[in-house]
Image 1 (cartoon, each protein chain N blue to C red):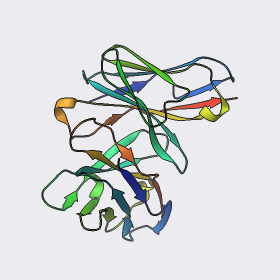
Image 2: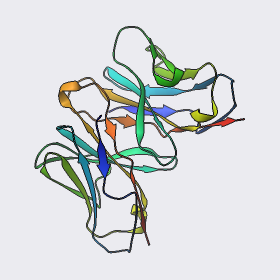
Image 3: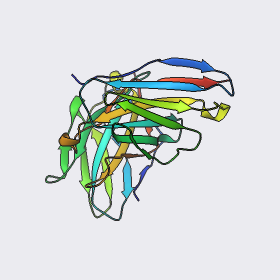
Image 4: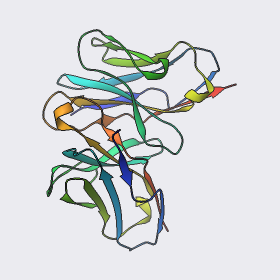
Length: 114
Length: 114
């Protein structure tokens, strides 16, 4: 079974803090993605990575950065958290050789910035 | 660029009644089509996908969807819903080649009433 895990299910941070959201997949997938999910807006792509140390901006990268030092781990970084970054964050991964089969999603991290 | 429109944000339906969740997409190139389901406090799970061939595709949990190229639609149906189908449903598209990004609709919340 493919497993995508996220370091926290719930996180509360203060405005201005640096926040790290971690995602780990155990199936040697090349591509990994970070989405944010907001009510009425669906899922929007923040960043994705197609290999170690490689990254591409998605549709809403402003205020975020990412890091992929190892193939299994993809980190989302909020350099200075703001209240408008309060959201659900979902990580996903795919096996490129298996495309166009499904993206596998983690359970999500609900981040609240106060 | 692609876009996805889910025409209903909320759909209430009585248990054992049929349901249709509507999805229309826009794209200048051919796309793959997906339906995902999100149960409360969980990540996304693939219900079904259309890649090519027969326009009627069957998925898990008794769901099916029909691809209509002329109407650029991919509506999701189930002939008889159960309480456990209460969830949020997302329609998504992806280009056939290039990146492996999914573009999601805003979601439809299905509420099954006992």
